[in-house]
Image (tube, rainbow, N blue to C red):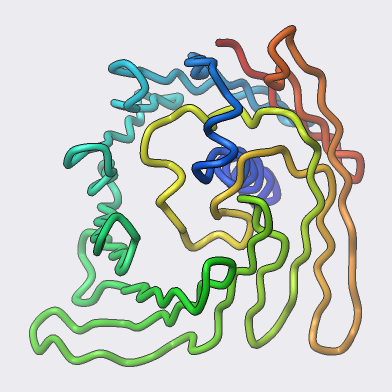
Length: 239
């Protein structure tokens, strides 16, 4: 279970450090995208191979031939699917408005509805939708992202607040087309252009914990290695 949690955290942080606003994108002339990611912990290593069509991600392949496929409409990612889930993304004027997470065998799916309060604040409500009746039940009413300079700096829910600090280098997947439009269910996932160097989670009882992350970079300031200080866990990238 711990390996799965840290594995998802690494993927989440990679996506968190994947996206850009227009100003930051103008500063980056590279078209580099990662070809492979290796995630290592005390239990061993897991390799993920990425396939691209230009800067559009086509698929990511995990051990045991577990494949996640991506579908674009124009320059926007509108579907992500594998054998055990389907994610659907809907946009209005280029901004994500709903995200649907569907799992096989369930009579419901989860719906994330986004509201753009300002250029720097995005809130969303999570509902559970019964397929047979289309009835919606709100299961998470308070979720707020706060952004600055294209990076998410705060994620708020009814039970916790997570704050993030960044470096000024390129994130691993910042050149992947459409990633800057997607928000997802993991707290660490959102729109950012740089790499998270630390994050602090504060709970409603004011207890908190902080994790710091260090990186090694190539000559183009893209990370080749990510290390978590608090746990024996790292990610490496090849481009």
